[in-house]
Image 1 (tube, helix red, strand yellow):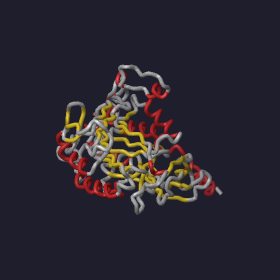
Image 2: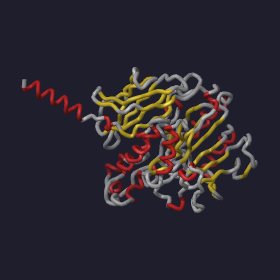
Image 3: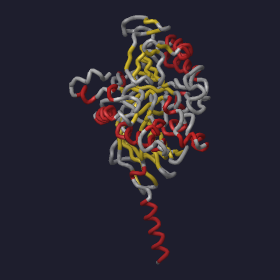
Image 4: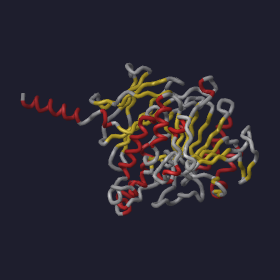
Length: 410
């Protein structure tokens, strides 16, 4: 009897160690592709403190989660990142899902809508939020706005063009000057994005702030330098559709949604002379030939232009910014953008907003946005981060309420 009692207590203890709140940082991303290039799957990503065997149950009703997919897990430092791809989804359909672990714990039930078929009425438009440079500090108004949009089906997806969370700046803040906060800063930001990204796909590109940990504790530790460099945290925490599109990790990839072909680029290391081609603070790069991939991807996008007439590309560093030009990027990428008729090129990095008329070779081609034949460059780097001061912020709440924002704020 004593042995049976002991085994029962051990089972209870094991169940207690796995709680619903052990599944953190839940976020989604488009995945899969059918024979016509439509995204027909969704990846569900989350984190656990231990290597739990986990799975995602899903279905078309919150009380009927009859399908299940196991997650894969990996650990680059101390916690475990899980990814589960829910396959063969019906287009334009609401699905409900829940993370479980051996039946002993489960997350709350979340939902998302699968991508529509291109060329259909539902797939004739897309509402997406696009920006770079969003962090915890000064990013509260943007996250509040995105939460409201995600909860009301106001946006179909997020296209986040680099600088995701600013974890590498954590040591600049009180309490972290002499303490290792890089991982906890990542976790805090990912948790803050969960109410948004658990509902709508969060599609990302790398920025310079994802490159490495360079706080004092990392610079003094060979183990941390090795494990937290060359975009490792970024590539582990997300699951972009690079496998489906022939890309590399989360560095570059492409996907389709409705009438748009989206191309997510690595503008940090992905071309000769890129800003972090070989080093940010620590060594980085070496992911492969992005330029050759880009041309092949664009060729396929042009062949499908009847179904998806728009081609949108994005990455972190801008090609054009005020009166400056990134000549290396221009030489490597601009000829392809023009040759294949890319419509819009989204970037961030500079914490401001700028939209150029359609431009080629540093010259305005036409002062119109109607079928110009060359890209319109749009830089959106000011949603809020710790490198922006209060005077640089624009409060979205004021705009939503119809109020006038402070004239100092751009």
